[in-house]
Length: 545
Image 1 (cartoon, rainbow, N blue to C red):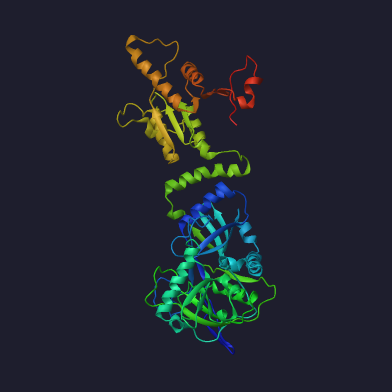
Image 2: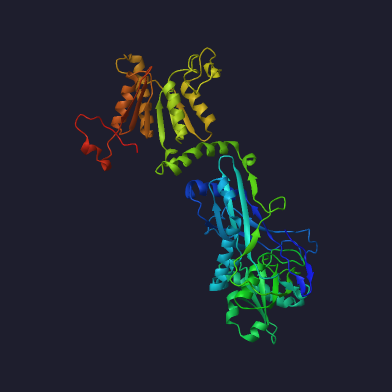
C-alpha cells in the first residue's frame, strides 16, 4: 500500500500514501434501496462521492512508515446523493459507481479499461481546463459493485485513479517543516486565507490551492488554483502549490498530489515546483504546531496523450483484488425478514410488472370475513403480494380438525390456555401467526358474529345483533378491499349489501371439492368506459389493474 523512498542518481523517488476505503453500513443500505427502487436492472455508472480529512493526531509528522500505510477515504449514507453535503471539515472526492446485476458481470469486467476510462476523463479535464476551474475533478474515486440483495453479501472494488508520468517525480531535497518557509504569523495568515477559500466555496474544502508570499511585506495570500493563469512572473516565483494532504508520514505525501503534478506538467509545463502538503485543513483554528510539510519536487516529462492510470485498491490480504462484506450477521433478524419478503415483489416489478406498486399495496386495508380454510389461504396470498394491513373477522374457535386444512393453525392453537376445553379464537390465532410470518404486518382480529337472513332474532338478542351490524359496517367502511370467505351463502348476504351501499370493492370466494368460484363486486371505473359498455343485465364490476 505504500512503497518506501528509493534513491536514484537524480534524487529521491517520491512515493505516495494510497487511499483505503472505509464504508459505513448506511452506504450499503442506501445502495440496496437505490438498486431496488431506482436503478433496477440498469448497470449504467452513476455519480457518487467519498471524503477525506487531514490527520487528526499529531502536531509533528510521523516518521514511522508502518504507522499509517494508507489514508482513509470515507463513504457514508449520503455518498450516492450528489446533493448531500460533506459532513465536517473534509475534502470531497468525486467519481462514478457501477452496480452490476450478477457476479459473472463483475468478474467479466475488464478492470484495466475500467480504470483507464476514468483516467481519460481526468486527462480531458486537465486539457480543457475544467480541472483548473474545479480541482475536485483531480481527486477521483470509482467503484465496481455487485450487491447480493438476498444474502446481504456484497462484492466491491474501489479505485482511486491517478495518471502516470514517464518516470516517477523526485524530491530535490528532503521534506522540510512548514516553519522553514513561513513564520508563526505567516502560518496564521495561511490558515485564515484557506478558511476564506472555504467560505467562498460555500463550506466546501478546496483540495488544491496557491500560497503566495510578498517579499517586501512578508504577507501571505491564499488563492484558488485557477489564479496561476492570472499571476505575473514575479508572483509565480513566490508561489507554492498547496494540497490538502491526508498522509501523516514525514516523507510521503498523500495520493491526491499525483494528479496535481500531472496537471502542472501537462498544462503549465512546469518541471520543478514547491509543494505545501497542508495537513491542518481539518482544524477550525491555527494549530500551535503545524504538521504540514514543504517539498521541492522535480517533475519528469509527461506521457504524450497517455491516459493510463493506476489506483485499484488492494484487498484485505494486500493483493490486487475485490473485497467482500457480509452484513447478514449484523442485521436485525426482523428487518431482514421484512426486506426479504418484499424483495421478490421488487424483482418481479423489474422484469414482468413495471406498473406494480408494492408501497401502495402495503398500505391497502384488507378485511377478511372468515378465518377458516379460505381465510388462511387468502391471507397468506395477500402477504406474498405485499399487503401489510389485514383485519380478520371470525366468531369460531380452532378445532382439532382445522390445522390439517387451515395452514395458519397448529395443534397448540386447539387448546386455549384460558379455557382448555376450547380452542383459541380463530381470528386472533390467525392474526398472531401472520405477525410471526412477516414481522411488520399490521394484523388485527375481531370475534364477530355476522347476522344472517332467515335466522330468527329474539328480543333478548336484538341489541347485540344491532351492535354486531354496527361493528361490521364500521369495519367495511375502514377497508378498501373486502373478502367474503365465510362458510355459508347466508353469512355473505349482509356484507355484500353493506359493500354495495358503501361502494367498496368486494371479492366473493367459494371453494368446492373440485370447483371454485370468484366473484368481484364493485363500482365501474368511468375512465375505463366500463359503465358505457355494460349491458343492463351485467353485474357491477371493477378493473383491478
